[in-house]
Length: 83
Image (cartoon, rainbow, N blue to C red; front, side, top):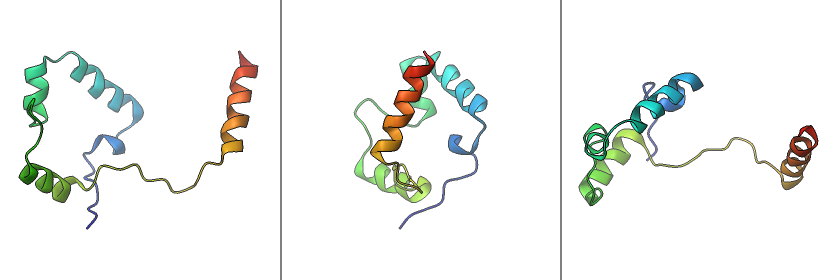
């Protein structure tokens, strides 16, 4: 069963807001990060995994449109041309 992401999830924030969140996280100690994200060095228990999947949904990147190899090639060529 797929759950919708909460609107408070970083994916729904403006790019600059997400960058600030990541910058603030980078300044935290290991213990602070573990507390903030309710994690541990040994990972999640099976029960925690199930609870988080129910709360946040599965951890996957959804694509609405397939990117063809030739589109990526042209994009890379344009990038190299602009250097």
